[in-house]
Length: 228
Image (cartoon, rainbow, N blue to C red):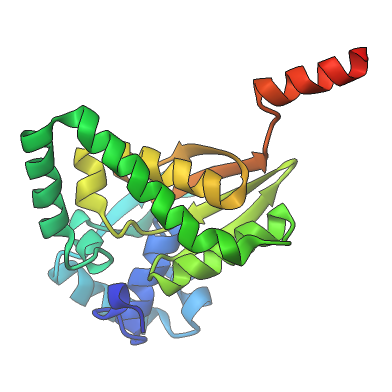
């Protein structure tokens, strides 16, 4: 079991936490269909999670003329279940680096870190079509303990990441998310746009992936060849 899941076993309680992390707010009916257990069993587990301040009950808007329903979602405390145990150390070190060397140097180092991470993944992508590269990357994320999946929407591919291993660091320093975006673009050899972020209150990060566009240099080369 991945390091990030060491406090989340396959008990009903652990499965509920993972479902809420992946899907966002869910009602009793949705949880019952996903887990295949009784409403009573789900309510019992939810009460334990609420008592531990890991889950909170909220009211969902009514659908049509129906009454507002009750849904359950994770609290901020639950984020720690998915965070790396070294996150406090990483945040402290990052702040010390900023204090000692300044943002320009630290951001340059961050770019180098992203490039080094990309170089570890890129060999696994050779010879694969873009769709397969994204699918391979989701498997690599899973090995790191990051819940993810790929979806296809019209002419783009979307990579969804449902937990952030360095949530506090990214919340304090937005350039961490930028590094992730640049690293992903390098790994996939594609254009990548980060459209949703967990640190902004979304229940997942969404990376929109498109085939790489030609650089201005490539476009100029094509124009010159056409002219000749």
